[in-house]
Image (cartoon, rainbow, N blue to C red; front, side, top):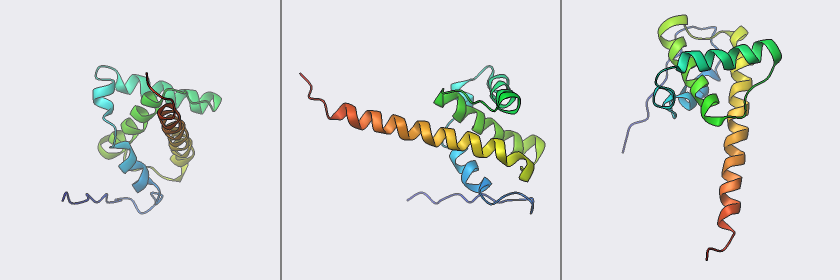
Length: 115
């Protein structure tokens, strides 16, 4: 059985739910999804949210954006503080909503008989 990896919060001002977000971020390989331009696309998602309060409906792009935030916070900017959480909260909420919708669509598709 694989041992669960622990995420350590290094900054005492980092909100507790960052642990959950960090784990969710690493369930998706943003580098594989956007190998050449992950930072560019993630930056555009963040810019759209800060400028217009809007997030795209592309689940892969949203998950890659969360992945980029996790990698960036770990290696470049430091762990997020309270001021970063509104964007991260919105990102995770939209990801969970779209993941939920995708699961419901797959379950409905199984209700149809195959020929």
